[in-house]
Length: 180
Length: 155
Image (tube, each protein chain N blue to C red):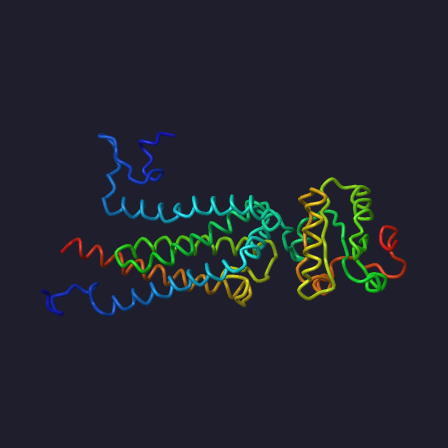
C-alpha cells in the first residue's frame, strides 16, 4: 500500500504535490495527535507497574484467575474438579470425576491429572461457598507447585456450580481418586 | 468586550454550563471507575481474563493500562483547553467498551462486567445502557467544546 496516498493511516499526513487529497487542517492534525497521545500515555507506567509487580509480587500477579461456571462451560474442555469442601459434603454429593482436595491431597490430584485423556484439560478449584479465601490460596499454591497455567478458581464455589446445573453430579460412593 | 447580544450562540452560558456539566460527569465517572478498580486490580484482571481473549499476564497488563488510561482521561477534563480532545477520546473509549460488552453478550455471559469496578452493582444490560448514555454525553460535550474552539478561531 502506498502510504503517501493513504491519509487515513497517518496523523498529520501531508499530501504529495499532485495528490487529489487535500492537506488536513492544523486543528484536525492537533486533535488526532492529542487523542493518540492520550491513549498511549499510560503504556510506559503500566508496563513499569506490571514489570515491578511480576518481580516483587509474583504470587499475586500469577495467582489463579477467578472464573464463573458459565466461563468453564464455554471452554468445552475436560474439567478436573478439585473439591475443597469438607469430606462429609464431598461424600454427600459432588461433581463427576472430582477429587477431594480438603487436605491438599496433591498426590490424588496429580494422579487424576496424569490419567486425563485430554491434552487440554483444566483444573477448577472450588469451595463450599462464601468468600472461599482458603480455596483461592489452595488454587494459587497448586498453580505454583505444579507449574501448570490451566488452574482456575471457581467464583461462588459449590452454590454457584449447583445453581448452574449444567455439570453432572455424582452421589453415593466417592470417586476412586476422591476419599483416600 | 463583547456584549451578550453580540456573542455567537456557541459562547452562551447554556452551552458553557452544559459542557462543564458533561465534563464533570464524564471526568467523575472515569476517575471513580479507575479508583474503584485500583482497590482490587486482580478482580479487574479476572474480569478481563473472562473474555477469553488474553492470558493471565496479558490481562494483568491490560487491567493496569486501562486503570491508568481512565484515571488520566478523567483528570484531563479539568483542563478546559483540552476538553475537546478529552471528550473525543472518552467517546472512543466508551465505544470500545460497548463493543466489548456486545462481545461478552455474544458469548452468552450476562453476568456483572466489572466495568466500573467489582464493587459497583449492575447487570450487563444495565451497563450497556449506562455506557450508551455516557457515550451520548461525550458526543454532546465534544460537539460543544469543538464548536466553541472553532468559533473562537473564527473570531
